[in-house]
Amino acid sequence: MEKLTKLSSIAIAILFSVFITTDVFGGGPWTKAKGKYYFKLSEWSLKFDQHYTDSGLIDPNITTGIYNTFLYAEYGLSDRLTTIFNGSLFSRNVMNNLRSATNNDILVQGDAINAIGDIDLAFKYSLSKPGAQIPIAVSVLLGVPTGVTGKGEFGNLQTGDGEFNQQLQIDIGKGFNFKSNSAYYSAYAAVNNRTKGFSEEFRFGAEFGLGIFNSRLWLSSKLNFIRSFKNGELSEEVNSTSIFANNTEFTSLGVEANLYLTEKIGISANYTSALSGRIIAAAPSYSFGIFIDVN
Image (tube, rainbow, N blue to C red; front, side):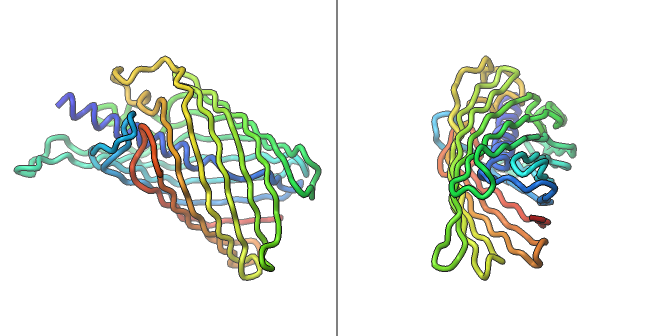
């Protein structure tokens, strides 16, 4: 039973590692004009019964899920400085029953918690003047540990990792016309400093977007990478659920569609999956949202 409990703890923490790393990327080097804003309310979900191990192989685990209500917001403090909020307003973390393969008896009782998740606060500053052909921006992100850890009957459910992190990021991109349609590409690189014994991370990625039907529908694809410095103090042998997200690495590919129903209001859908990884869920995530974009 102790081994099964540890397995469920690993599954929960692996799930959380993908949760905190798939929704904070992106945005590109473009800042909002002073007084302009963008808000998106979305539902994000991930359910998986297998994960990438620390050697990159795939192992089974107790079916686990996390379901989040996210609020993402950008507001232009000036034409070159934008403040960003990205937070899980509500998070449900679920672990299904573990049943015997021979007689279907319950070996480990399922569990669930509902709580607020972690919140990211960021400031993005444009190094280039508004309207520059190749904009460049730097960002400072603060990961606030507002989520909970160590909950549930076995203390293995969580909606946050319990650590305060700081990330420094640089973005570069370009907007252009592609066969009479608007398009863009961007790339970023970042270093994420983590506390509480977690290893630091190097993050980088690229994005391509295309606007069709007079830019009413935007289609984009995002490629993200995380590589761990492996310099943390936490050990996987320690019986603590929040430490198993340490040394997470992955390569993920996501596709997204944003449809403007009016000039300012639209809906979005996203599908993201890890192409390879270490200590991360081997299953895709889905999100659907509604947004307001005032330029």
